[in-house]
Length: 427
Length: 158
Image 1 (cartoon, helix red, strand yellow):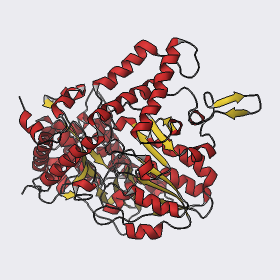
Image 2: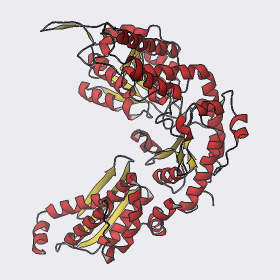
Image 3: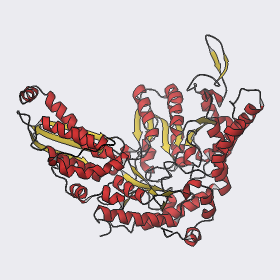
Image 4: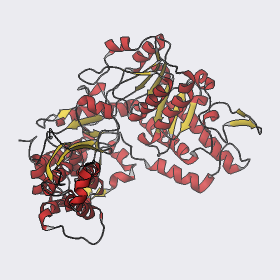
């Protein structure tokens, strides 16, 4: 074999996850890049997919493809039952009270936009403040910028500590009587920081504000309960958690969702339509205008089943272990800058770094040549890049199928990159 | 090892580590900013074009990858001292080299160094990195040409 693939090492040092078995469930991981084993470390962008999920998509189109909520025929009934069944699977996964609080969207971005358009335009008034962290993804920043401009509201940013954690002392002051909304990431896609959502939510609620959590990075990796987080909205995407692209979830508290006007209008979201006016459907369909992404939603249920079978606690354990290992190995490189909390238990499996004198894009390119997929660039977090005083970072992000050996391969490739670019870090 | 040979040639790394004409021009006739939204790379380009339409000085402040930096550095050497007209021709033939598929035309002799960037074509995502300084320069030359007084002298020099 062209690479030093040690089966013992891949499994022996690991948590209770059976990585060998998991890897067999992901056909893409057998792919080679120019004869080299694929090392996929771009999971924060999107995860790979297990065969059970891929088969579920296939089965939908081959066996019971039909539109939901309308046809009085077997196929439609089957499709509807599975589509609505997935809503229940999602409800249980995030510990929500009722499945009518689960709204399927195209992704996290659409879920946040839904809240910005519907709730935001109904509730945010001139002089109100929207509190964000400085490490929000553009999708949890730009919709609020636009709303703030429209409503003459103000964006307020929390402070970060040196390690990239939320400064809770100043947070208690920045979240004030004018705060209408706190919109915050559950876990940073750059720094890996896990935010103290519950603590922040309590501060916001004390001021009568509403709390939205961007769970795009958090939900796939952390055991998540909307009730213990004590928040009002949670948005996340299925494609980052073994599911297909094109499905997101907005969870919201029933009382709040009920009071909100629809976001899009058309079929499926109405209860009756006359020429001049219509009555809208009840939750959750009020927010699901048009034929939904039936196949992908149903397959998303399979993805959640897969994660449930492993157990989210075990998933987290594995990620803490591999992150801790990666952090300790990366530190061996002279001059490297690693961003975010140093303690692996305080962060997700996302490690951003910069090598001295090597632009992240050059690094990404050289690593790609070695079969290693990482992300390089600003990660849709340009304001944070500005705070860090960099143009971008290289980012390795892990998931359930990644191994210590792959971290070793990353290290070898980084040393090789340094050699190509002029030997700065290994000198 | 194709990548190292094609992309990270010695010439490119040399220009990356020691970019020529780096910095800014105090009394520039034109300054223009270029951004690559994909990666966030930025550069500010300064030009000093005299009445006769000659590029007397060019400088760049760039924060970018090796391809971007090297491309800008080589570009500055290729167009320094040229007329605006000639600079536009050089831009044209460089962009042709980077963007045309199939038949490959060799570059003029005075642009020989730039041949090193031909390998970038194999990596489509990186073509943008190589083109950023050139597109920024083109924009700068357009504005320089549009200035009253300067534009008339430009047409005189034709």
